[in-house]
Image 1 (tube, rainbow over the protein chains, first blue to last red):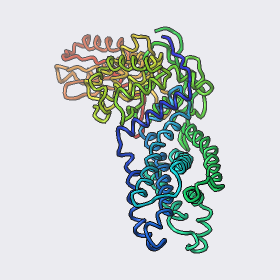
Image 2: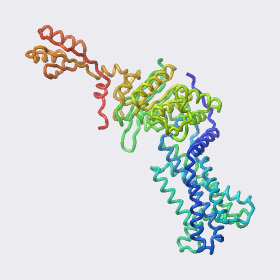
Image 3: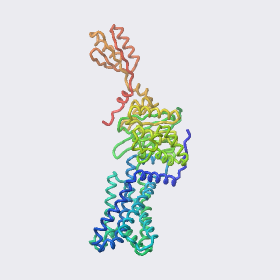
Image 4: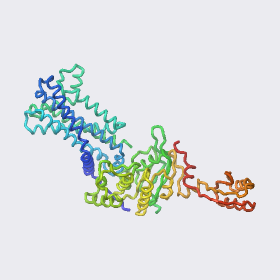
Length: 258
Length: 311
């Protein structure tokens, strides 16, 4: 019998895998519920709880909390990639992908590209909730697009870290608890909700070292000044760095599983 | 069947942290045959299969599939075969059609030929009516059929089936057997693992028995039965007084200790010549018998004799 020689086309494989993951989400739209509901609930809750105490009113607090919640939700969305990958491993479908003559990066890249949909949902839900609560940034709409893209890019870079955790962890439950813990620590030990100078000394040091603080600062600066500040360039570089380090590591971990 | 070699396994071993799952196994599978890997639970069947299909790295030894080394030319080796895992690994959240489409595309088919191949396979495996249903609504048999259909997208020359009928009801099982036989008729080589002796007996041209990671015996099902299994002779002695005399004669002639239950004598034997001589001696000694039964060895007997199992 003739054996078909399959021309291996990495890009085509990645597109197919992305399509597969998007189809999964469209068949189960409830997978998007977490990144849709979380920002709405947190924004309303934190806005009305802390607004008065921190900024003297909800309206004055919105320029602080909207970028904060946005980045927190992006972190949450990024951590979902790890859980998804873990689930695919446990159903055995990854074995099937591995037994195909396709590029090894394709199943991972497909998952992560499809996860951009989660990041977009998270961003739109956060910003829209802010808008309904009265948030009106003083910059033109182009800059809103810029922070949206910046947030999605950073989220995507971070999702490679979670993908690695998903591949290395022992169980899906473990992935979920690691994701939740890191999301909570990174977002609360930053300037997402409070001015850092109100914190005890040690926590100030930690918050100032937390990369998430820089992401939030960059977004706030863009929204306040309508320019692309140096912080934003640093954040962009930081994102590129994460991808350069973690994408190969993740592919290595995927290959190592045999 | 011809004499070309499809799979060559050479001194293959796999050691997990402190346990030898596969221990120095060598064999060849010929093109066009159904090769059965038989063994009790935990014998190392799946580990062996995962190594041959490039999913697991061998600790030691080599495997070539149609001449391609699974470690050096893994991509080339993979393009020659299809694998169907132990638990149907299909995409739960997608429909049968979407599953087939995606795997066709991943195998390098164009959109148009993916559609054509998908329709063809849906028809071949009688899944057309459930093509757009979610797999979650599928029965076990339907899942297996879809799983097998996915493995056959590229019309591979070699198909690996890991316990293809475990957990299926008898009807679906025999349907699966028919499907496997028709694949061989079309020229495929089949490598299957099973823990069902009946399955190995009915399907396989040759069987390898493994236990505790070691290859114990390899041959046709008939060879295995005759090499290891023993036939059983049972007869009734009409006159109660001569039963012990009869047992003595059989013990001498058949070289095996008989069992006496009421007036029935049961004795195992290996060589049918001996059995005939034994019966002849009974006749010479004027012992009248009835209810003579000679039972051929079954693969069950061979299996029991060869393996110990995990317990």
